[in-house]
Length: 199
Image (tube, rainbow, N blue to C red; front, side):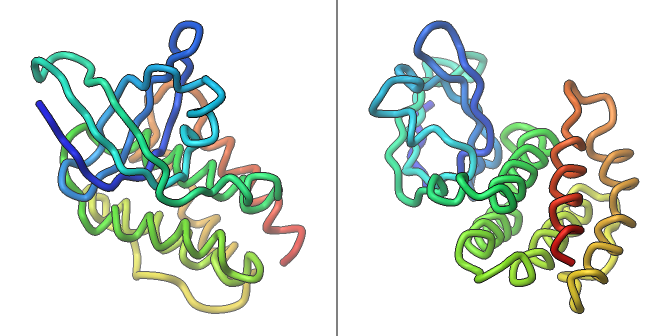
């Protein structure tokens, strides 16, 4: 297997002393895991951050082997990780994507929507500019995986968007995150608390 594609890094877990097992969302191949040698080293540590857009090269001798991944940064989300609210939003949306999607099934619509939502989080003047995009992405994810999901991107004041966000907690937890390792919803709870402070 040899793949080269634009990708969004959605999860990274330490493996051994210096390596990282990362998960990437690509438009053509869906969610793919890869072994990044030296991912915790000085050169790659700023690259192997959830939310970053990368040029991904994967290679493996067989489909059953974890592929080796080479990554080159194309867009960094690093500057926004110093701010609590954007950092919480990026952390949640990447964790949701990495946890909910099945491996190696393409969802081109989700790839485009995730890319657009991350851009909105990083470039909108405030959370009022990106909160509806984030909730719209959650609804799209539910729809793409066959669990309905009402409407598209919600409109209105931040307080109204938070109400819609609250209503979506149960289907996200019940359909997408049930029986998953770790409490992924804790990231969403933290994000919601931060949004509530500014609403």
